[in-house]
Amino acid sequence: MKIYKIAENFAIIPQSPNTQNDPNVQIQNLQNAQGALEYFNEVIQASEAIMTSLRNLEDTLGLGDIGLRAQLTETIKAALQQTPAFNLLAQMNLISSIDNLLNQNELNNIKTLIMTNISSMSQQYTAQQNHQ
Image (cartoon, rainbow, N blue to C red; front, side, top):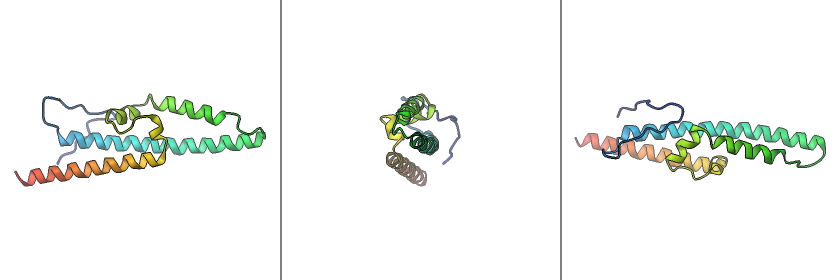
């Protein structure tokens, strides 16, 4: 099976609805989705570091929760919904909202689903090639 790196920047590779699905394109789209998930993993890690710093700032101020973390969370969500990575995952019906991507358990479930799909498609393709 040949895998072509056609798309960059988390773009979905379209397929013609009038032809049979190309497993190369399907697998490439799933691999692009894996890249998008890694991007969101990095965002989660950076967000957690910022939230820890904000919590420390609020503790230093001695005023308790002054709403900075909630404001930042909403700003991050709004920004992420505008990214190509979010659009790719939404177009592939792997997520239903940005909240799915900010939850580590959901991210892990999506990763597992993608790996299962790639494995399944690879096995089907190999079986088809062996029967030809």
